[in-house]
Length: 175
Image (cartoon, rainbow, N blue to C red; front, side, top):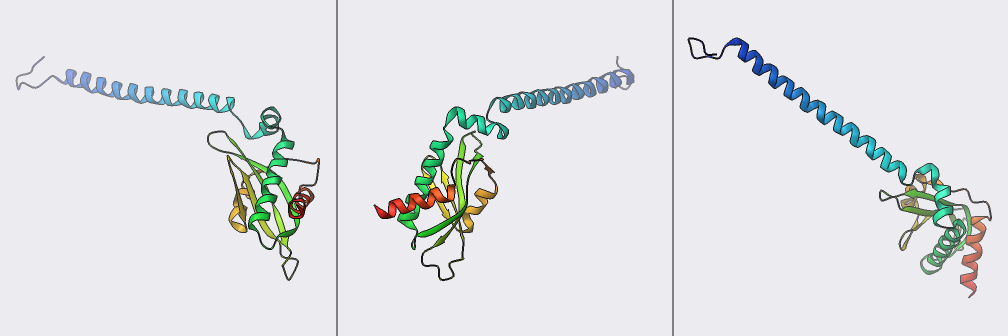
């Protein structure tokens, strides 16, 4: 309907404004519902993957913890023998830990402290972190400490890991 000034009538303006407001509201509501549904699907996908609380069962299903421990002890001892002079003579507080990468791959860490043969005080303990990756990394000193602090311990009571590492390093040294 056109009035004398060629302007749309007020009722048509109200109808157009109401339609625009309804369209905007519908668009926001659609975006909101889609994002809620995506979050629910994402949560469901994540719950189907590895969760932090299920790590002991994941280890027993996918990897033998004994094999992991032996492997990472061997890696750490070999690296100490090849790269750490003077050689460590004592280890303490050695623990196996883990963290989960964004792609849900489990990273294993051997964390602890060592004292060296040539240490004049014989009471200086140095932190170390061995990371079992596709290869491995060994960090000496505080630079690797954050890996251990931000990881969860895997209870392992079959053997004393400090003693196992000492024995393995001594075995390599004597061969």
